[in-house]
Image (tube, rainbow over all chains, first blue to last red; front, side, top):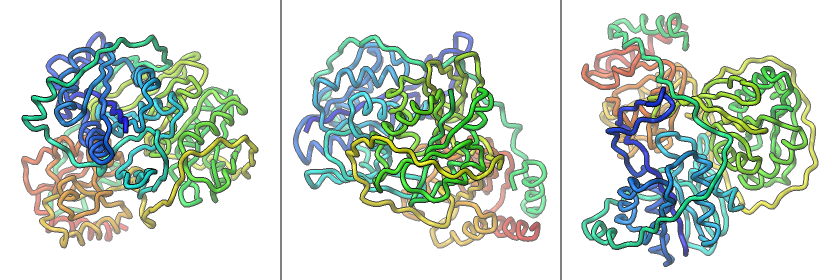
Length: 246
Length: 317
């Protein structure tokens, strides 16, 4: 099977967030960037498992400049066979989706994997967009993929439960917790990753009707009000009268 | 120009979360000086009640019993949106809404904001809409342009109010698209409000010492009619089911009240809960980082204080 995994770079959860250019741009200075966990732990590993089961190749694709090569090499070290980087800064989810679709449309991938969302913008947009651009079915937040038969059965997380969906390749799937177990790259994988192909291709011109106008920081909390453990009546009163949540 | 709201159903019943999307859509329609329609795809009881939350009309499309398919639903919504000359499409930022929003943005060449936390500001032909980003550490203000705008609304962003009357659904006849996927089954828990939509959440972590001790958590949750949740380690070691896990890799929630019991408050946990309106932390460790994110804190042994809180709530009824 020909498998594609879309990977993204995000700031580490613990990163201090600040902005520049009059609060219109994210300030990446000094920020530790990582391979988006949902892409790495669930989407990529499940794709590798599928290749191990059915044969084929796993290609990873990323949209970004050469500073992203470090996360791409990590994906190769975990077990992807080859990588493609669309050589332009990531602008928006719509632009990213169009770049991925442009590459994928000539390649006839059987399954296109992504993580369920990135941990910075949490939009869960790119998978749905890629699927629509390629006119493919899309199953979001899959927590299990049964690939034992010719067709696939995906378990998808929904509010308060799960939904089971049967479909045939080709399709796009976004992976949530449960889809696979995280794999730590070993020394052999890291050495091999250096020799695996990383093809850099130019991006296409795209347009979008969505843009970030500015960023603001949320209002600071007033600070915690400590309550006497022997006076839970006071907590209940505060929740009712001050916080007004009961 | 009009606003089209996508209502959701589960087990052939309208999900109550749809009321919020309808109310949001009505407010957008009012600020644009137009009307709104709620669209129900498939068989669902309770569709008429969407009128009570502001839908000026309710539209229903029969899919012949077929389940959710993002590709087919997108084609249906696009047809209805064109018939209704919709300039704004409102969805919930739910598993269904997230599967559709990106597709609709492509299919309709629309501006898209997923996860809106407030109503948009109308600025001529464009709209400014906000969402939280970077694990709740910042707010991004997006500008949407284009003839059509798609907005998915984060749960608990706006409290729906009863502002209208029931509206008998209008059945629409459309050219049904092909469904390329087949829903084999849906398994949901009955009786409790799903975590992403819960207004009150009681959550516990490793401080509980073992799964056998969860009785006091359930009693507190029952008293509040809250939904129970847990931290990642507790789900990973199997003390609690995975669907209860809130945090960055689990479910992200923003209830009105989040009570964290015996949870230290690692950044990955906070990332999934720090948009809660009010946070109460119960922990015996005064250095627990969670206190820094809390509105109210109780530094005490949870086994002592949780039953006292339950009793105080009972007394205050």
